[in-house]
Image (cartoon, rainbow, N blue to C red; front, side):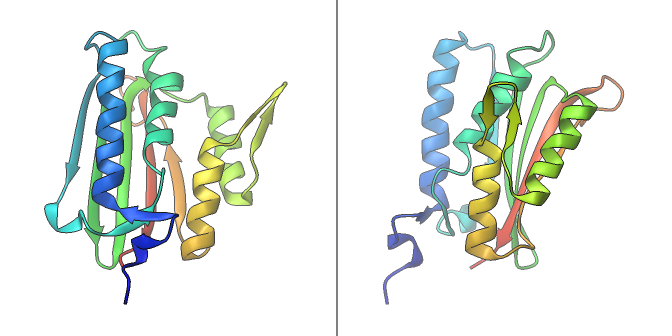
Length: 166
């Protein structure tokens, strides 16, 4: 029997982490080392099959919408853990928090599974990943957003992704 990740849309988590590390290396050069990153994942989860391209777009959003506009620390944390029979991936940035009205729109977009249209552009990155997770694993899984993460400084955003451990 062939492993699940032989499908074109699935890869071992280690490949997603490697692609993310490569992307973060480029970011280090582009931002002259001003963005710090940390990826925490247990080695026993590295072979878990995951949807392809689910980490890098979220980190790219975190940099573009949170880190670039921040005057404070510029950090990105990615944590992958198994809780019972669910894989939880948290992507946290220390940048500018999402405005409450925009956060409300993002959460509604994820709940309704429709992209956000603002003025002349459509935001599909988070919506695309959320929809792919729900199609693959069911409506109980997907993305959630929390912002601000630090309620004292009113900064940071956390995107949580969950899907079943297989």
